[in-house]
Amino acid sequence: MNGIASTAAVTSGRFSRIAGTGGHLPGRRLTNAELADQLALRGVETSDDWIVERTGIRARHFAADGEQCSDLAVAAARRALDAADCDVASIDLIIVATSTPDMVFPSTACIVQQKLGIAGCAAFDMQAVCSGFVYALTVADSMIRSGAANKALVIGAEVFSRLLDFDDRGTCVLFGDGAGAVVLQASDSPGLIASELHADGRYVDILCTPGSVAGGLIRGDPTLKMDGQAVFKLAVGVLEEVARSVLVKAGRNEADIDWLIPHQANIRIMQSTARKLKLSMDKVIVTVADHGNTSAASIPLALDVAVRDRRIARGDTVMLEGVGGGFTWGAVLLDY
Ligand code: ACO
Image (tube, rainbow, N blue to C red; front, side, top):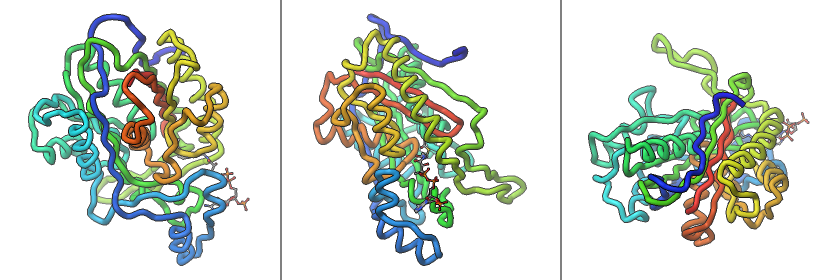
């Protein structure tokens, strides 16, 4: 395919490596049964059984009124800085992957920078919906390799609860809020080994929030719309394809993957991807049951969970895979 943004494995030079991870979930946890009770009050029928069987989701976390995307991002960033034993003053790049920013502008990354009490370094948002973290990590890696940055905070943070139409049972049961972050720093050895990013704008309509702000009013519908079956079919195809392509670039194969961290949208998409890559589900990090789909936050949150419970150890080979609205998708292979 033409026009693919990617980095290929090289054996010497300047690389980037994850120095620490962090995650944050807002305090309000809602089980399927609790959500079903609330939806019933609006005349919307669903059940724990339906949600678990079709998606694997059992609960999600929702931000409190007034709790912003940047608040979740800062909490995750502070944990990542602690884990990396890193002074915030040494950060020279902040990228926040989000589709639910605090404001139309400035970027949530600038607000995060202000809340962290630093100034001067580059800060910008990455908008690639559920693929946002994989996009952001690839861009940060490129900037570190080129010498444009030395130590980056790469964050995925979302308050998707704000986009949901609670009269649409086909979408409102799927999503949750949260944030995950990594400190990515320059290193003599990889680190990130290979990555690849894709988009296909022909599929804009199958997963979108079409509203916008104009003339002081909301124009169009500001809630999330999804053709679930179309998304499902595309997702399982591209997740296999991009994983294989990144492995070829890295000169590795499926057996070299210690851990697969796919975007946490739906357990059935993850099972299908693992099957196609001939990986046992024991090697797949799954947090969708307790987090729901947190869009750009899902991959760094899952990474942080598995690092903190010591499944992922230093030296393990990890494949991160994102897929989402746009349609966008991508993968990063790294040695943790
Ligand atoms: N509770 C009970 N019944 C429901 C619910 C619900 N929450 N939602 C839909 N239904 C009903 C429908 O109304 C329909 O009823 P009908 O047969 O009487 O008309 C029936 O269930 C089947 O509906 P479908 O939409 O065909 O259900 P499907 O089996 O496709 O499952 C789902 C829907 C879970 C969304 C599935 O399509 C899917 O997993 N898609 C992948 C999309 C995804 O994961 N998106 C996340 C965001 S995208 C991303 O992050 C990449």
